[in-house]
Length: 260
View (cartoon, one colour):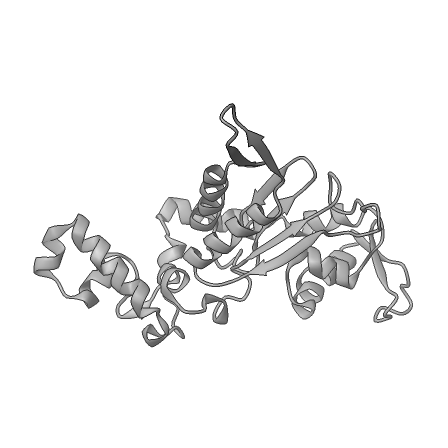
């Protein structure tokens, strides 16, 4: 079993909740006060006894937003003004490709029609991700018998929102996957949403069926160049799974990588 598989089993056995682990360097002063107040109002409306018996600081503890006064990961991802200041890769990378698979070129040689790194709190990322899908969806214009026009999106936006929300809320938030963003991939005939998982190296290898540049790999993963090279590309090269087109000049600007 891999280290991640062992951790996942142990977490399940011990009922470890990674989303409520403390983020020691996070500050409550950087939480969005308006969003917090909306949350307090909603919780008290649904649970009246809370509004009568406890303070706001106690409510944050009870609901897992803080632990011993320290913000939790769930609290940071929901209420922080910029969670990526603590966890740069807990974001969404969204791409639209011209064909039916990553790497297929469009008529003008383009690899991507649109791409975006979506950051912010979970509520903000949800809205921006839905907007990304809506913006890149084809729209049918239907004229009914009364001559009224109605636009119909290629994908039902309610279902899109549900899928993205599930990916954001139910992704793996363990220390083993906090460097893996959620990916939204839109192809010619389908859209896929992939939650944070540890199969990013497998995805890179599949992408490198034909030689790829560093820029292409960086765009695929959504990671910084340093992290991508040190944590993904170089380990794959060392394991013999990935090869360089110019092995005697590893840092060449013309360097490309392909699956062994």
